[in-house]
Length: 185
Image (cartoon, rainbow, N blue to C red):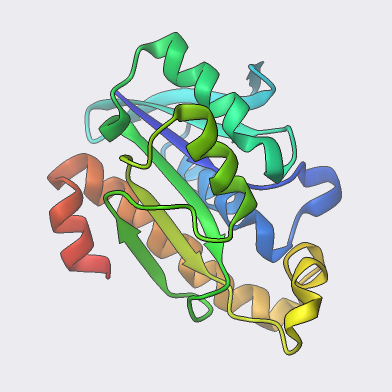
């Protein structure tokens, strides 16, 4: 079983923002695999189904980005998961818009949502998929950049990253993370 978590902020207020690429990916996967995201538990919206004959639980924490790890910790504990069976998907300003990078493990960088996940699950040994959102014109404008609404033309570019991230999740489940990294990095 895999726990697939997209990081983001509640969609009623933060839909179509750069910081919600994780949520967009979960929505994409759910639509493609007909997984209903209609249940709530542990301060998250979630749904379960199968991808490539493997059970998956798709999760969108609703605690706002900076506390995302709380929901992740509770789902990991509830399902008694190994860290290798967790996939976290999130936005990354250090990667060009629409580009996807997969890592087996590693630190959170300066992403507050990932800092929360690492703190709550007490390890950095879990796969993650980072979706590039590019950098703001002014470094001091990072907060507005990630939570501000994205123009339609740019959003289309970001959605290419969401599509690749969705495909990368399927590849990890089907063939393992090493093959997925070779294919998508």
